[in-house]
Length: 557
Image (cartoon, rainbow, N blue to C red):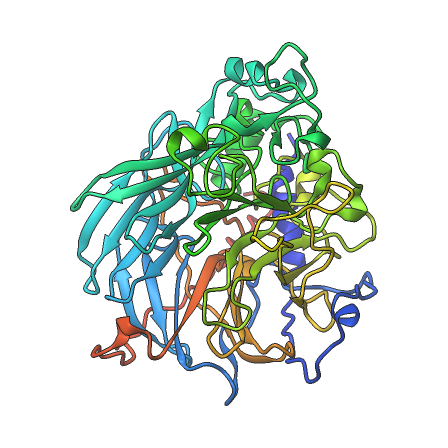
């Protein structure tokens, strides 16, 4: 059998030529910033980052002084570096982490990959939240990792100390059919629909679930009239069409042998089977909370949409369509990115492409109350190939090689403002869609082409008005001004090779060995650093180096 995985990896490595982006020197008009450059066949871009120069690439006098927090995919450590790229503190653990949040008291909350959970197989799988003190001691450990549910991707720490987290919930095939799912698009393993849980920690371990929102309570479908959620999605914009197929890639499902190859090469995870391909239909990868509005924002790249729900509801109201501060119960208050999901518009109206890291800009920062999002895989208008929407393609070989990322697509960071009325409720346009038509600020590379990460990644606003960006696929972090000038740039030299007990990787990475889900720039005066020595560690952690290729056997051997 032909090894299509090797073809895919080879294609990525061919695209790995180093391509360092120079700082923008002048402010660009919005139409210029979003223009798509003409792609030439001889162009290459650094999709893997394997050949890129590593460390601090640019350091000016105009960046924000502070420290950067991050964890490479395949390590069990979280690093804190200064703006010279030196590690000044680290938390060494026994589990890998998707992302972490450093609290003002110096405690670190990490979303970690439990190593024994069954059932689930998709990027971002985690199952554990742990809290560490500054010295690395575990002070709280929470686990949601079993056959029916699994924490994944992201969490948010609320002002009251509770935790909002995203979790998969198994919806067996029979139940999915009862919810009106088209059986032709139903994996044998059923669906993994999301829920949002609010956890009240009970230290040193465990917690109480004090609020829950279930996606399956807010579905609509026009496929099966016999089901109680039957309706026209175009007239039910606040509900999710269970039969949306906006990101599907054609082709036959991968075979068991092909999946085994992908697991071995780090392109998918150990629980993957032919039966659960496509079970994760929304792949929710980010959660944010606005305490003033008491609202939750979610990023659902499987739908190419972000959505806002009401946290002010009771648990009973969260299951229905009435109640709460905004009157819609647990139905969507707002959604944006792809109106085709609710029967409106065309592909030309789509705004988001496999996006990550949606969040509100905090109060007191420039742009406060606006939303930012990393728009990963924007279609460049040229030959349309299957694209990667969450890091892990559903395409079968030989489409798999193309699914790693279109050679002409590009990424952007967007800041946008949802339209509201005088009372603050989100409004629809006359055509029944949610605005805005355009973001109020964007960042793309000056040539569009050289800033690209088909999956993971993120961005957040800084106190000085700059924006800190993680180009996650190849481990690049940089700070840009409102005028889109890069004032600091770093390519992480750190990566790992941590394996699960079965020998597989805890998160898919393949040739993207420097991949980093997110990084966070914390100002030098952040309270967690007060009174603490942040001198460079001696010795510094060893940079990651790719193992040399094995020599080919000579003829006759």
